[in-house]
Length: 304
Image (cartoon, rainbow, N blue to C red; front, side, top):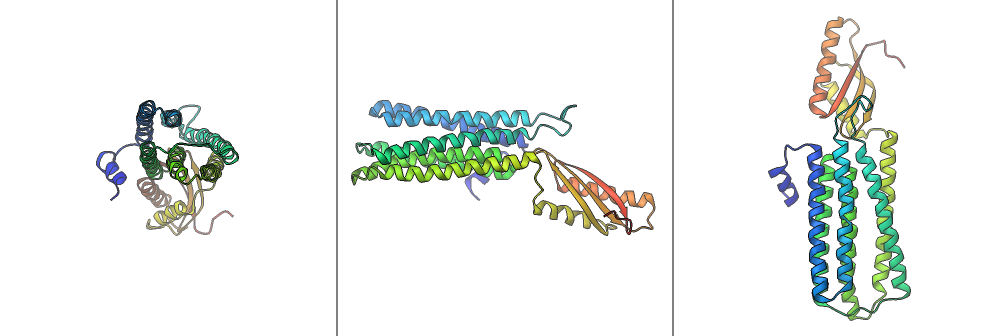
């Protein structure tokens, strides 16, 4: 079992979706503030402008985590008269905001990288700064993996997006650290080339996150695995002959599922209703946070 899995199993196994979002946001906020303080103090002690600048870069990453925090705070608000299915889709809006931030990061990476390729900066070798930046990169990569782990656990694109913001900072720190190695061989332009590759990769990630969030908000079709689960659970109920017209409306924090089941045409209304209730109960038990609506079609009366 990985450390992330052990941590969640030990302390957060029965927490709500909002709690997982808050956990990721606060770990990110506290982690970035600690990185800022350490980088800033080391930068002052070593008289390193690059290290001080990296510290403020880490501090700026707190903003994306605040977006995550607010997304889960408002997204967890209960349903009301104007929003009868809750506010869960606010998470997707948070994802869009972070994705656009990633595009800005990619642009800055790309611009700076091109400048460094054209005019490679002459950097003095400093083994202490190099080691510290590599350690910082490892810590930020752990934060990215932790965010991805939680994002997959609750199927949250906002946490995945924040993870990529952590990873961009990890890559930046890694490039700064590796840059000192290239300095020993006078390969000053290598830093710019690597940075440009990273900029393209981060930009593509941001575009993919924007696309997936827009697809979700427009009401994309449910994935095949979810539909198969609905079919398997429904067909496991005695008396259900078949099912069709499965409709799924995903509101992030909840789903609205409606379907038609086929039953024998000689059943009484009472027996047919009992079967429908059994289907509804099993689906609610297996598909957590789902509102289920089951329609009854006697065999032979299915509408095409």
